[in-house]
Amino acid sequence: MHILVTGHTGFKGAWLSLILASRGHDVSGIALDPLPGGLFERADIASLLRDDIRLDIRDRAGLEYAVGATGADLVMHLAAQPLVRESYSDPRTTFETNVDGTLNVLEAIAATPATKAAVIVTTDKVYRNIGQRAGYVETDALGGDDPYSASKAMADILTHSWMTSFPGAPTAIARAGNVIGGGDVSKDRLLVDLVAGFEAATPVSIRYPDAVRPWQHVLDCLSGYLTLADALLAGAGTGAWNFGPDPDSFQTVRQIADAGAELWGDGARWVDESGGHLHEAALLTLDSSKAKRELGWHNTLPFPGGLEWTIEWERAVRGGADARDVTLAQIERFTERAGDASWTRRF
Ligand SMILES: NC(=O)c1ccc[n+]([C@@H]2O[C@H](COP(=O)([O-])OP(=O)(O)OC[C@H]3O[C@@H](n4cnc5c(N)ncnc54)[C@H](O)[C@@H]3O)[C@@H](O)[C@H]2O)c1
Image 1 (cartoon, protein in one colour):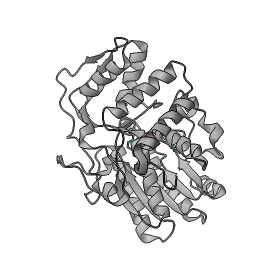
Image 2 (cartoon, helix red, strand yellow):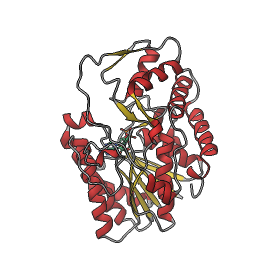
Image 3 (tube, rainbow, N blue to C red):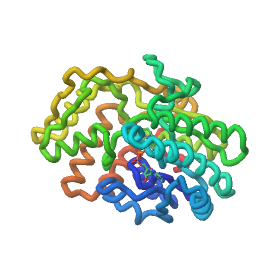
Image 4 (cartoon, rainbow, N blue to C red):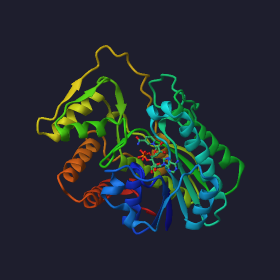
């Protein structure tokens, strides 16, 4: 199968491209240039691709041409401005990329008869956070206070409207939360900062050590996206789907930092700089019962598994191991462990 991944140069997109290529699919990508030192560069993903297209998804005409030229069977749309803090400093780029960019992708797919299905990736932050303890379900109200969350909620509503209003390739929305895994180099992500500090033997300052966060390994998230794509290609699965970690993977930042430091070894440390900061907004979690019940998906690497695999990856690659080999070995181990919950059916 020929699969087009938008955002293939990013963290999730690079893992997804490697999974698909390693399973014998043709993979093409559309994205901006990769950040230095991330998985895309380290594992030389470019050499595995049929088309490696560097294009801004805000360029409507260029995107329509590029998607049509690839003629992919399946489109996985991951390209986005995904950082909350960045969305405050540059809200216009965030809205244009996440909203207009998604509209451009949907239009380009509609103009490409070869495309049989599409998965549009949003986030857990699309839900209006009303401070409830229970996980949010797919029918809960959408909203979003910060520009990133609002832009993703808008992309989600836009995709729903598009799917409902226009016949075309079966489309689904995938909502997942914060993910961890080897090769992430994005700004403002706890594990990225921790690992950089551990390696440099510089203790990392942590401001909200008691904040509880849901942690999910990138492979569990991607197995959800691919299970969904599988369902779409089989004539089911349209609509919105949550793919979140289970409650046993909700841990405080302190627990993650402590466990990460211990796994890293070499006297790795972090520093508590909470000094009276007020607590952040209530934890927002996903209820993924629908995906478990109807798609047969489940998490395979609950805490501490996902954290162990992330530290293992970073330790090995920063110690000189080949990034592609390390990533492929983790993909194979995951496939064995996950069984039916992995991409073993069509992918
Ligand atoms: N990583 C997480 O914890 C997380 C959590 C929830 C949702 N998501 C969603 O998953 C998707 C992938 O996230 P990620 O963590 O891999 O992010 P990332 O920042 O690592 O990658 C983003 C990708 O989008 C591309 N991109 C950004 N702006 C673009 C533009 N204008 N035109 C073309 N390409 C553009 C980048 O080049 C890159 O390939 C995003 O849609 C994000 O919102 C991520």
